[in-house]
Length: 393
Ligand code: AMP
Image (cartoon, rainbow, N blue to C red; front, side):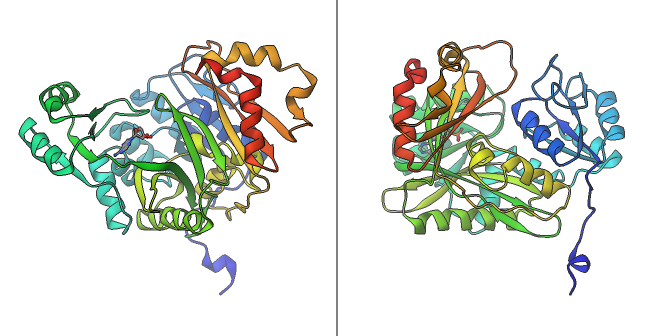
């Protein structure tokens, strides 16, 4: 069969306009990658001068539930994507009816809700931490007794970066934890606490023609529940890297993903992998791909939603990605014009700085990241220590 007859789904060729729901840094990096490929961009975001609005051809400044604005986005776009997962279902329907949203609404529906997401992962034959649906304090007590403490109570919707979570250290906390999290007026889920050795993530892409590719697994280090570093290659056995990448491909296929899916995983000391959660979009832990892989996650997402062949995910260099939060900007600015900052010849580390164009450097706000390319990730970790930028973490 010729390649052309293998194609299924619409192809959006360069010159077309990609609409992005959301104007944050993920949209910005998506637009920058897609512009290099010849696409035009329009973004919808309520904030003035949004990071993506600065680099897109146009920003529609309106709330995400503004129906008129969603219609305008639909009219201007040949294809629509999103850079966050809590997209209003009503708006998704308008966009699906009036434009082309290859990612569909089902994946959003699944990943917006922890219980639905866990069931979908299990249906793909991939393990998740043992969990229970919680609808009362009595449920919580029974499940916490079964799992033992610590265990983690989470809201099914709306949580991110550790928000909407309660780690129960003892059964004495049952009533307070239930009362506090049930105020969120969403279902709750209790998870067994996984005493993980490492947290990993794998980003996979799938296109309408059914092509699937995974990026190399990243080892992620969080500080105060916010991603601090991604280390690639992850310092785990090659067999586990391969297994993690295979799990992500299996999930992408089973969920019929179009575009990117980020799979966050726990790895235990005895080599068992559990999926923690999914994100159907570019992911902070995939920023390392921008210089370290032959194709970045952003280019790959554009390729996937436009139904172009996917790019190679080959890792070109070991890399450490380190996030720049609001509190890191002043120390960064003090160092950024130093001649040895970009190329540290003694350590053999090359630093690529990415900033997102956010004016206010609020504490804990994601302002940018640095990709440290090196022959050996240990050298990049030394560079991070030596600069002192992250001392205040
Ligand atoms: P999440 O919002 O689900 O990504 O959780 C935020 C962080 O809490 C994770 O990155 C883990 O460090 C920790 N965490 C979440 N769930 C569990 C669990 N079941 N066992 C151990 N740690 C967890």
